[in-house]
Length: 116
Image (tube, rainbow, N blue to C red; front, top):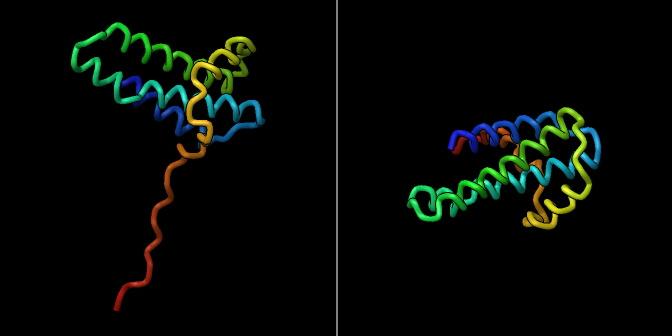
């Protein structure tokens, strides 16, 4: 899905720019959860198999909508209702050890000594 790729690129770019506060870091971490949930393999399999496609589409769209709302709050200072944030955190509170820095590109390996 092209939207997943766009969201993935946006996540990497946002993580590379960093955030300015602990609250923004929290939003970015939740955005990472939403991205992972949107990309979970079951939904794409369901869509390809053609079974319960409406549920799969709805789930993907819901997580991507949440992802974009969270990123908008970070990028533009858009206020998100506290009750909405709380509900999202409860509903999608998976991956408690998730770290948004996991989206940083890996550094290129440095060449080691040549065997000889």
